Structures are given as C-alpha cells and as structure tokens.
Length: 307
Image 1 (cartoon, rainbow, N blue to C red):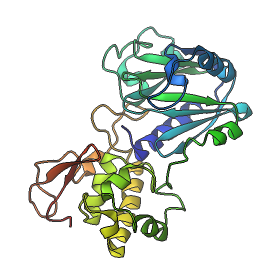
Image 2 (image 1 turned 60 degrees about the vertical axis):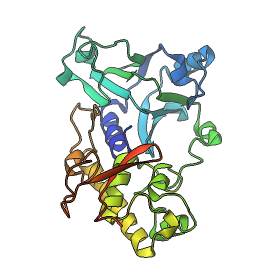
Image 3 (image 1 turned 120 degrees about the vertical axis):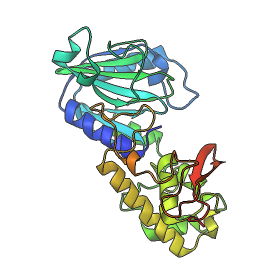
Image 4 (image 1 turned 30 degrees about the vertical axis):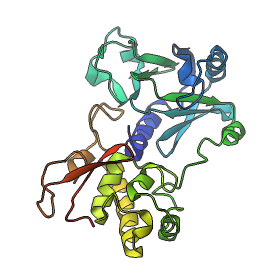
C-alpha cells in the first residue's frame, strides 16, 4: 500500500494534469467502488447513479491529501475522496493519446500500481471508473478492488461523516510537536511499531517508513511505547519528520509495482536502510538484519543498533 510520500507525489502529479478540467463523461462499472468505504461496502445502483449525476459537468479545482487519502475538490463545493488501498491506480491520458486505440507504456501518465495485463490498451478489465475530461481521460484501475472513490455533495456532508475521526496528526503538520508525541506515547502499552501503523497518533506511516524511522531513531520495533525515554521519543519524532520530508522530495519509495503519475519510480527505495533488507548486513554495524512480525506486518531491524 502506498504511504504518505507516495500519495503526496501522486497528488502533485494529478494536480498538474487535471485541475481546471471539466468532467464531460463518467462511467462506473463496479458500483461497490463508489458505494461506501471499507470492506463492508454494498454495491448500490442508487449511489452509482448519484456519483455519475453529481460529478458530471463539474471541474476539478484542487486536490488535497489527508494521510493516505486523496481529496478531489470539485466546483460547487463537491468532493471526491479516493483511497488506493492495495492495488488502486490512476492513469491519465492526454487527449491525443487517449484517442488512440493503443498507447505505449511510456506515453501513459500513471500513478499507483501499474496493471501488468493488457497495459497497452485502456480501458481494460481492471478499469472500473472512467472520467472523460476536456483534455484527456482519467482512468481508475484496481485489480483487488479494495480501493474506493466516495462522493460528497459539499464540505458539510464530508465533515458530517467524519471519515478521519480516528486519524492522528500529519507528521509534517503543525500539530505534530514533540510535546504532543511525548504525551501521546507515555501511557501506551502497545509495541511502538504497532502504534505507528495504526494512524491514531500520527498518520501516513506504513510498514516502510515505520521501519526506517525506528532504525534511524535506534529503537527496537517491539519496545512498548511507554518504555521509551523522552530522548528516544525525541529521536523518533525527528526521524519521522526527516524521513517523510526526504521521501516526498525524491518521489517516495517505489517497491513492487508502485509508480508515480509519470510512470517513473520513486527514488527513496535506494535510501532504505532496513525495509526489504532482511538477511543483509546493517549499514552501521555490519551484523545481519533480523525480522519478525508485528501487527501482521513483516518488520526488519538491527538487533545491535536498535535498543
């Protein structure tokens, strides 16, 4: 699943290409993708009709991000909330490319997880939502179909649902102060990595940036949060901010099939110290990196450098 830096880079790419364009046509082939969020979604023809009717003719006027979610701002105050989950993908084809029956991979503007099958033709069997715009076509593809695009008629209805009620603060936001972090962790008896993954204190970190931040802060991922000293929390706070900033700057981490909107790979994967490096030598002490499962996720760490 893409984490904050990847989604932020996707937001920037989409903003550059679709903001200011009017939606001329909308097609939805999988109603459950626009019928609600989470695994309990029920396909609804009514929701699908509403999604199509209410977005048709609107303009994309801006794109925000909250944690790993994209928030598309439409004209007349309307909103589309999108979450890629495990395999969601946005593909934008400028008009002269979208009109061609086939398109080479290098001509696509892709963000998410490229679809291997029938990549040279769009739409394909994994294309479930299509927005025809004034200057091109925006496709939403999803092999596993865990992702979603949700429509809200205005800011009030968006806020009423309180989609982000369990989310903590943004790691690069003004609310993520050292004081806040210390207070949030001091009574928590969960493993520190579990807390970083659950989004309730600080949002946007997944397996990659949790492992990398804990390594930089020299903290073992299975340490209980309330066992951390103020100095250790300070080091972790600093590591999270530095790593997220750096990852955004270089395009995030492209692992497996994830790509940025221009179909390039993010370069932060080249800077990973522990993620994906089980069995290799620690960059600092040269001992073999270990792994364990925490919160259902493979966790890689150095048993010497991290304490």
